[in-house]
Image (cartoon, rainbow, N blue to C red):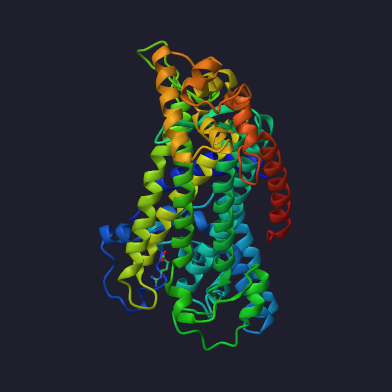
Length: 495
Ligand code: ARG
């Protein structure tokens, strides 16, 4: 469960630190690049800035440092580093992490990315032994590892947020299990349904989304380290040990694949796109429902804004924004698919472009889930208005047809008869249930006084009493089943 403190850190403090440090960066600083040996001329200033990724990939610093500590620990265990060397490296890395946490780290664009920034400051601080850290690895397996570690953590947060929203939906569904609303097809009133049933439809969609994220998490939890630049390394490394230290299920099985594919990023963004598709439909309904014309829900002042010119307005900005943000997530998915398609094996610099779309996707879905997790449980559900809308829409016409069928009339004939009855009711400006028995019998002599049981909205929803149906009893059963499944899902989650 995300604490408010964590959310503030995630959404407010870290981005602010990042902005501040970037603003203070100097692209012409004099930091020494670790790869200048074969070069005779310095990098062009603009090229240096153009090729750098540190302004966004320093977001991976915690994973980068965790990966380096695990790597150094393994190098120590297999005797490539002495215990003293390993200890100096680990302590140095921990100190760097503390400084970055506090915003006291001088990032350098000349050092290109998070990996070289951390490594170069490490060597500055602990001396030449810092240069031994990179033994048996490359930035290629390093960045792929960092990104998997980062996305694993973020996927867990997304799953927590999804769970919170799903629990909110279950609470509303339970409370409103018997609340009647018009159900729509073609946005025309079709048949009455219960509001709880509608909430459970949303619940089902989000449950599949959660399953997709869990699935992605399982596949991404393999460790690239050891692949080095592309072919592996000549050092006697212990990949299983490093994988264990970092909580990976196993090392990646092929070094070329390990450094070159970003399918886990794409899969995540595909799952995120479907999630946003669902949230966007959800948003569209909330926008409609909170209008004066529908008047089914009140979203609460805390989730709406006013108009600077029209004093009566209370705009559903939150659902509108979530609907709008869906576009950028789809866009990121398309960017990433396109990014990958032309790349020969193994690593190419193209892959540096994977981070910004992924980061923005994660931020967008976390924000959207968070705001819906807060909004859904507190929205006011206007039962009277929804019932009145269902009544006005002749929502029980199908029930009348079913009634005639039960009395031996063929469905197509029953359909015709009810159509005539609805036309008459429209002409008279009344509900079907308001037509006198004699009038109804004029349409079909098989109609008896018990017809009024099926013409009521309550009778209509109660009659759909089977698994997946809208009856209040079924909604409560569905809520119960969902709670059991959610608890099992929780127990099965890797931690
Ligand atoms: N910043 C790079 C990226 O995000 C790190 C890997 C760079 N590797 C290299 N050989 N230039 O992909």
